[in-house]
Length: 231
Image (cartoon, rainbow, N blue to C red; front, top):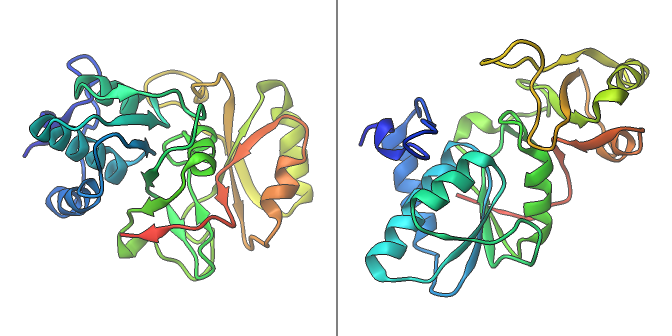
């Protein structure tokens, strides 16, 4: 199956490409097999979650299942509409289970997420899911969180300069605004905020809480203390 066969819609031609497509579709099919009639399911972001959404949609159509989905990104919301799945507002109620990916997973089951820019909505999804499936491949496992990816921080625009100074105080060795690929200037999130990507040589426990306590910080891509089943 080509990537073009799973565009979110005729207008939203996402995804452009998915690596290891066949392997990821096999995992997506296994996760989608958990879907039962009448369930509410949360869909995070990234290719694994996106493919699981498609597998759920096709299974629902073939078997006549009544499934509602709550999505953490515009592309998954659009794809859910394309698939004919009923949408449930994010955070409006608990979902039976959810599926999401990660950029990094450390030995303490801490995660870095947010490369797709949906970290704010993803945190809401994780907090409202009774159970979470994490769909990752072996390349996502690291000995030290922050080895391969920076920590994404969603920040209110007026607080960006203040946050930069605070990140320097918190020993961030490098940080910058994430730039847009299809526009001039920085990425603007779906909530109208900016994203600062911050690199740390060490990410101690509690850094997320310290960052969240800073004025203007909406959310961080550090996921600590969450339980999940890896697939």
